Amino acid sequence: MSVFKGMGLFSLVTGFSALMTGGATAAEHVTGQPYKWQLGFQEQATAVGRQMSSFHDFVLVIITLVTIFVVLLLAYVIWKFNEKANPVPSKTSHNTMIEVIWTVVPILVLLVITIPSFRLLFAQYDFPKADVVIKATGNQWYWSYEYPDADGMSFDALMLRDDDNKPIKGPDNAPRTLAVDNYVVVPVNKNVELLITASDVIHAWAIPAFTVKVDAIPGRVIKTWFNADRIGTYYGQCSELCGKDHGYMPIAVKVVSQADYEAWLVKAKKEYASAAPVRWKNAKTQLAAARVAIQK
Ligand SMILES: [Cu+2]
Image 1 (cartoon, protein in one colour):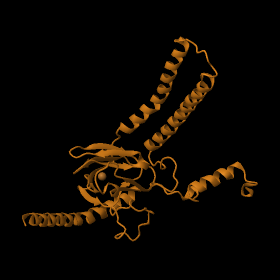
Image 2 (cartoon, protein in one colour; image 1 turned 180 degrees about the vertical axis):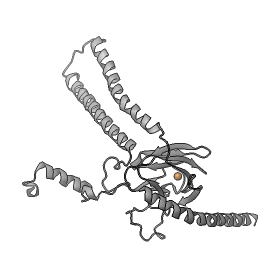
Image 3 (cartoon, rainbow, N blue to C red; image 1 turned 45 degrees about the vertical axis):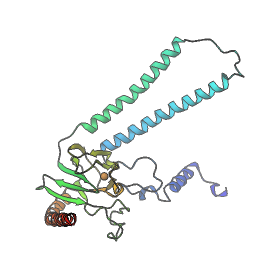
């Protein structure tokens, strides 16, 4: 134990947290994706996300206090009123005071939880005026994106596989099974409205750092929004069991400055305009080949 000799409580705590995070210091934590020995939520990049995070912490404190109280109460009852300690039990069947307390106190606890809970709900569902609109379509097993305001520009985002992805730890330090070939790009501090749907089965579009998780349902369009206030790359995954490659259709969003966003739009419009017909041609060729195979 001589290692701990002379160490203050503070260095013990920081030493422990360094141990928990695999030796990394706080500054080295990657944002927008999980990291080793992570505890709690990912660092939130939206105001709504931070509100959700603090609401979670607040409820966690209440749950902990309630649980400790109930456990202590149970222990007390076991110790004080077991057959040995209390051979002649009381015949009391009512106690108005206690009944009022155990009705009123839980109501008060629920009221205290309700207020921030409704505040959070209103923050999430109060849709601000959209600056950017993106349509996300879940497919088995990749995502398609469309920017209706950018001449309907659209592209697919497929997970990078080990064989076709040499820099799997790319410029954004994207971990395996989260990196994609085409990122969704959005400007920082702007309201991004998402229209989410699916083409085949139910998927779900989720980015933990934005507190966004919405089911993508065929034949329906569900709206959500986020306003990311930190530049960076954020990752999520399809969050509805959707088939064999459910775990291999990640979601990747790059939050960039307005100028970078505009530059990307110009470039992307050209790039994806030429790529789309090729994909469509490939799909048609595959369909024709399948028909031939069936006829044989
Ligand atoms: Cu899916």
